[in-house]
Length: 252
Image 1 (cartoon, rainbow, N blue to C red):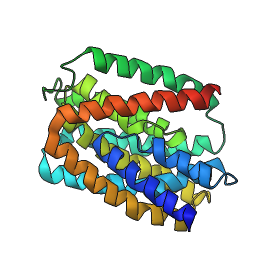
Image 2: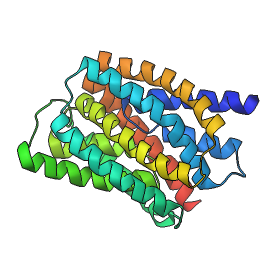
Image 3: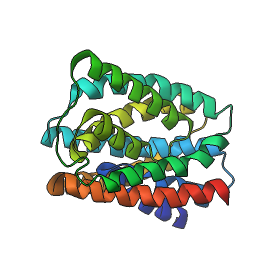
């Protein structure tokens, strides 16, 4: 019972953070590895996605009812992410993601420094592209992040937010909303493979999902109420924590 309480608390907090800016796996995945140290890593990653998909979907619906989503970028990115997340999930059951584990903190550090130094970054919604060019870039972003999410995963939501701000000109709130749509499709695709290959702990994952949804409702309301400035601050905080966590995991 204590294990379930710890996992429920972790899922609730992860849902809140994911709804704002992504990065909920920073809390949820370590909690699963700590409580279930003898389970296969792929099973724990799959279970985390099972829990997280409900919260992310809930946040996506909440965002779509309150703000205008840029579907011209979200839809192609989501399609590419769905296809390549499946490929990433298949790959992680065949190859260890050790090289990404060591590279990740340096990538996150570059993202954090760029965001911190550019004070106006993501404050104003000023789309940079339209038409075929926008769809092409969205497909590339969705493919790359989709594969990464299926293969490894930590920080996927944060990477999506950064990329939609940097390469599309959206503000942090709009980028966060689009990131939820893409993240849902990533998780659905990866879950198909994890479920087919038997790497899901259904009872634990569905129990955590209930609390993940509760947290996501709180997080999405905070993001919408306080706007892009608030999301930017949470983004920097989460990326900073991700740098510490992934650096420790990769080198110690």
